[in-house]
Length: 163
Image (cartoon, rainbow, N blue to C red):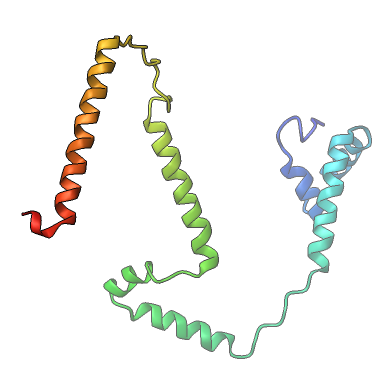
């Protein structure tokens, strides 16, 4: 027998654990399981799952379940196309809205970062400029003149009679 895991036929192990295989296939598979650790482990895992499913008991259905179900179906059928469309946009609970909002924000940030060419800082370093002494002197004179102009305009605004 070919190894079910190597031949990508792990459904056979699931069917074996569920007891759905015929007797001849079961014998061949059990012979294979004696020598293949991976298949034996997978079959044991599946058997554990099937035992847990067999032990699980569904909770009892409430007595008015059918009445409520058919009432909701009738309500959904009687909605107009517009109500069906707007029902999609009803306010959702905060538990659902927060993860969706966070995901949308992350996607928006990723899109903005990808829109840039990858460099957040300028690619070329600014070149140093040489400043001559006469330029500095001229700039300082201009600043002094502006300070005098600012002081004169402040004095005029303080004395209302100056106008």
